[in-house]
Image 1 (cartoon, rainbow, N blue to C red):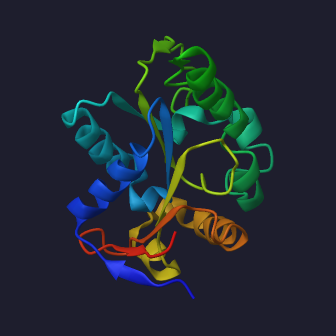
Image 2: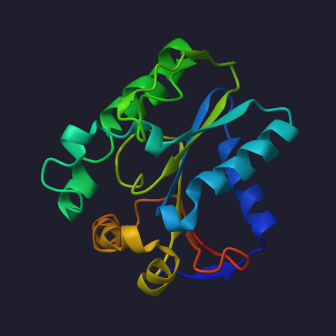
Image 3: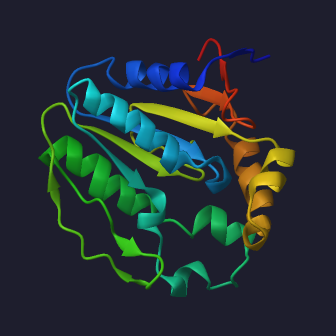
Length: 204
C-alpha cells in the first residue's frame, strides 16, 4: 500500500525541481491534474523556482493543445469517453513539444486556441541546452509522452465535486476513470485535496 508523508507547499515545489534537474540536458516534466487542482498554477510555481536557480523553464498548458471543436464535440458537449480520448491532442503535444525539444531544441508553445476554435498561430521557440518544459493539464499521467518526470496532483472524488465548476461537473467521472486505469503511472503522486497541506507518496 502506498504511503504518504505531509510536506509544505514550498517543499513540494522543491521536490519537483530536484527531480526535474536530476539529469543534465533538456528535461520534460508532466504535471497531471484535473483543472480543479490548477496544475498550470503549480507548474508556474515550479517554473519560477527553476528560473530563479538559473535554469531556463517554461510551461505548456494542455488546454493549448485541444483538438478542434468539430472533433471534441462529435459525440456531444459532455461525452465522458470523448473527454478522455479525443478532447486533447496528445500526439501533437508529443510531436511538437517533447520530440521537437529533444531532436531539434525547438518547441511549439500553443497549437489550438480553445476559445476561438482556430489555430493559435504561435511561433516556434528555440530551447537552450538546459531547457526544462513543464506540461500541465488533466490526464497526462499514463499517456507515454516520453516525459522525464510525471507528477500527479490527485484529488479525491469529494474534492473534485467541491472544486469543479458547475459547468464541468460532468468531467469528474472520466477523470476518476482515468486515474483508476492508470494507477502507479506517476513518479510523484501528491494528495492535493488541500493545496496548503499536500502529502506526497514515498517510494516513487
